[in-house]
Length: 186
Image (tube, rainbow, N blue to C red; front, side):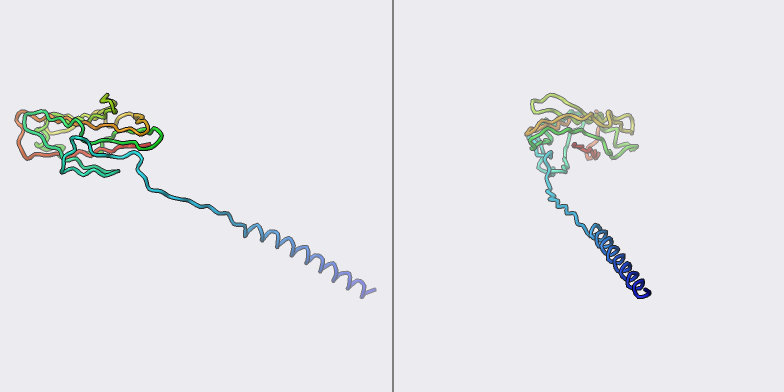
């Protein structure tokens, strides 16, 4: 009878070991499951800058960056009807806005050489959609508004940025300022 108890105990241990092994193997299978994700990343600028009819040859216009080199006379109004364009080459509309980033010369006597500089955002038919107006008071610039409201530029459309510069009656030559504006797209 002792031998039978020993055989039975060994059989139970073996069965318990077999069940435990099956449970461990099943749990281990969940740990080693693999999920796969594949991404294709494409660089595109569906809304981007393009040269306008008044873009100067000294200016740099690239898809996501433009540096306009504009000039004006003392005691005069200079207008760039089409300083640069904003193109939406996508098949859907996008929202865009102009946002002031910085202006140089604030607090210096150079500021008094200007009266105002205005950047107008015009749609393809020339209707004004928004503007940023930089005005002077003594040696200081102010901008109003600091950013425009979002405007919906339709699919496959080109809009215009018009710039009007007015200099003071006593303006000196060789004075400059640098204005940085962001074009936000969503």
